[in-house]
Picture (tube, rainbow over the protein chains, first blue to last red):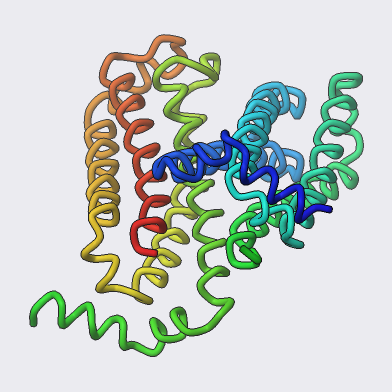
Length: 161
Length: 164
């Protein structure tokens, strides 16, 4: 069923345009990488503050307030640019185990990030009083994001075509 | 020694051969390269957006740079090491690829832009550190830096398409 869907999607007019205009895919990928840069730098700033390593002058709610909007904006850009890449070459992603691994890791980290945000908004002191949980959250979040970027690069090598 | 002889020698080295021939080595090094670039460009953008007065206007510029620069430089070193390894695997091909050449030129310009900023506007940072509005020199440096790094990422992505 999925292969049939891929065949149909890659034969649509919009997919054909993206495939045939030579500069669209590299340009969309460039936007995708710039959004990854935005997420990774914001997450490093936030998670290393949670770990208690950096930005001691600022409270956790300060750092969260400053960087989380960038994370969500960049995730929206990643979703849009990623969708265009799927439309262009559906089989490259939808028939690829690494792609599903990437999406699973992404789902986990988005839930964690959203949960973190809800808790920090409800009680600014929440994470300051729970150092151990804060550290674990930071390590898990960082590992998931690093895993997502690595999977993203490996999709190209694991693709069946 | 002619440049092409040097490139051939680089390609023939055991490390270059391993990167070229081993199935998982190239994608692994590439993944680390992408992660490094994300951190380099992301942390630079944080500073640049402050310099052009778009975000983080309440933060002192020097404090922001103290927080981000160790990441920028650490990741830059990782990007140079992994980039050199990737380059060595097909040195001849990359060296004669215009996107690669343009990317190196852009990195040089990025360094130049940074040097001008540090020797210029940044020397008087104590005077405008906490100002929401940064001086003209700092705004130009931030804007130029953003343009250069977007171009670097774009050219880097194009290298893969042009050399395949």
